[in-house]
Picture 1 (cartoon, rainbow, N blue to C red):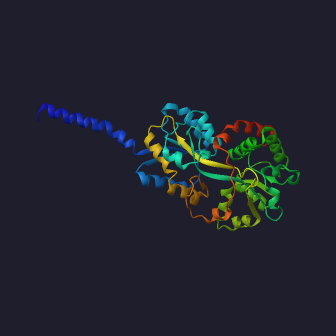
Picture 2: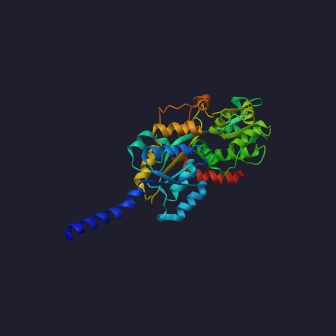
Picture 3: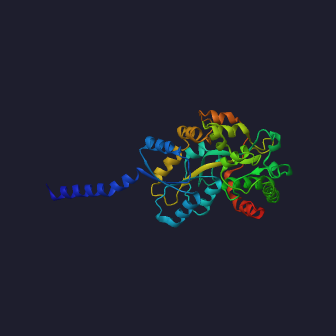
Length: 343
């Protein structure tokens, strides 16, 4: 064998050896997720089945993951961060963690309402902030608007989770957008004055409290109600028998909605895989899964799904306010919550 030919073989083998790790890395995606739904396992498995890309997942609370990403900086292995609520997406964006993604697929399928103006992050499903109430003590017309919860007639009758929680912060952000900071503060103080107990627990706990007679009205994301409605447990069925759900502000801007979403990390080592994952989340299969697996509504128009619990909630008008507009008001919403004593 000639020296020249041997040199070519060695060079080829060296090139393959150098390229192999890069090729292997392209078959992986490092995902940081604060979505705490066990049903997402099938969603992630669907991506791997469709693309052959393995997902390495780290889960945690949104604040913990954001702080971790900030600490890791340019050395972070994260490719994509997904979470719930525009407030959390804005916090990550404000920290400079996202890299805008130019994708005709994402831009065409996701309405502008559900993504950042610069495409730094995208919403993949949406959820409504509803009012649940004791169907035997409260009439639906009494809770036709969010502002109704601050009325004197509900003194000592309101249950709600913490004012520091993103679900309530983004609702208050929407009230700021529509009514101004002064009226938003008056509303927050009115709700605090009407509390039946100190804020505690999650949305399901608020509905259980209504059923137990501790209060008569509460703020609840719609999918918690849908879960109870689909449960076979006698205790859950009893709650649904006593509690009804209303989508507020139907005669005005529509019910406040928030999103589950995510984006590509600024220092993502696997940018191609990250883009593929984000585009996968707006595929019909993934969108159906958001609806069928976790009772969330798809952001992509026309996606068909088979979920009797969602269908039973009926059609309603949603607030068209852009998620970015909501996110920008979060700091002011937090200040108002603190001033109102909504702990």
